[in-house]
Length: 127
Image (cartoon, rainbow, N blue to C red; front, side, top):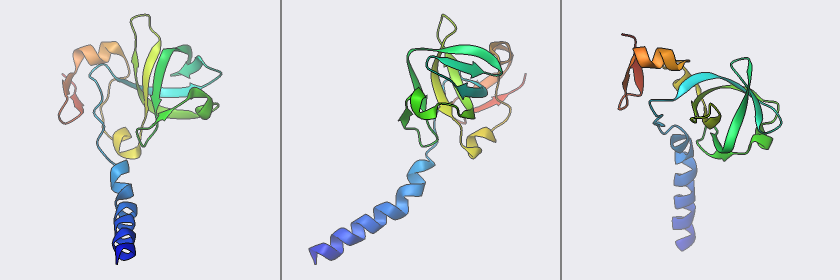
């Protein structure tokens, strides 16, 4: 009997696993959208230009799990990112298809300053 209950619990968790991966992530208002190619840490290419990861930078994959830059070496992806005060990239979120489909999303600080952000809907509107 206990074996049947535990097998049912495992089956329920496995069936629910795809739902966990699609949890809405809330990005900060200062997150910009761009393309990032990971090189030898801390070097990256951000929107076609050389850039650097900040010490302690966090990279989250599409399942929102932390990744090390070495695990993503040589990969290029669409992402939301934030910059620290020194202009170094300190947070990166690799985007899923549903997140990438949310448009518009600013790619520069100038665009973000002119647009309006709704944090609950995770949506930008051009002013």
